[in-house]
Length: 220
Image (cartoon, rainbow, N blue to C red; front, top):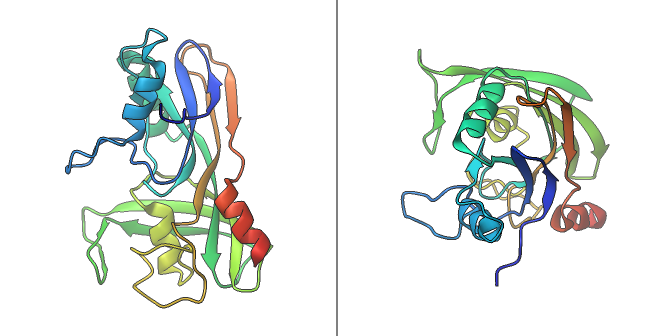
């Protein structure tokens, strides 16, 4: 039996799981079966749920809080809350180097990444990311990140553009040989906050820093 995914919050409409690093949320074009969707559906099958519906996504290497709906209608409601930017999202990230400001806001129009440069054109969408430094280590900074918008890979792209790519990021760090070694992108979805679309209750869910990131920070 596969290890169950921890539940951070649950009500009649939604479940917030504590996603481990290394799992895709949904199957990729390669039809990978070991996904978060498959695991949590198996986990809840004996509780009478035919299917759980993801309301947003996290990258494969990103850990932390992710919301699933207990029905398609609830998924649509929650996705609309995300679309209206009414979900507070906070991440913990490790980024290379020392940032020049203790807090700030990053803004740029991003579309996608093609190996050597970011594609930017009329169809690119504005992305906004706020951050504040929590702790400065010798070779990297521990920061709290709050994406205002929800573009694909937004946090990773923004800090790469700022010349402070995320520790462990092999896609947006331009292949530079860093002295720091971490087995995955050091990004954790630490907090979600929103107004429940059914009950109007204010919800806040937090996920503690996973063991790999915690131990890495101790050793530096």
